[in-house]
Image (cartoon, rainbow, N blue to C red):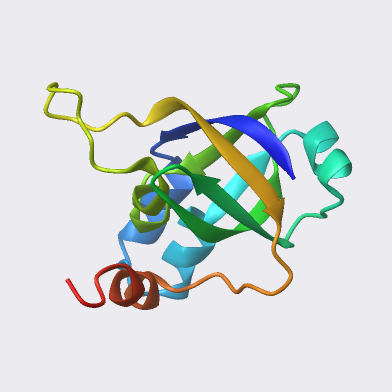
Length: 130
């Protein structure tokens, strides 16, 4: 397990996949990812495509590990905005009207027992019983 600073943002790949729709595999492949510094991946013992669990004080989600092309940036993890990021960013706004999407603490760990959910399955799981 490693502790990181988590940031989120939109990506070009996400925008392209969104043209097809959020319920297609292309969207999941583009957005249900956690970009990590290659050194952090090595310390964690994961390879590109392995499943990791990102957890914060507000939730956790399984994501596909991806080697960042923006390295070096040890200790920083990136998750594209979308249902997967929403599962771990929380809804608190600190009276600003917008939740924080950058700069909060997260834990990343190997998650061989987990599977990356599709957007539909993730939303069903998150809102089950609501």
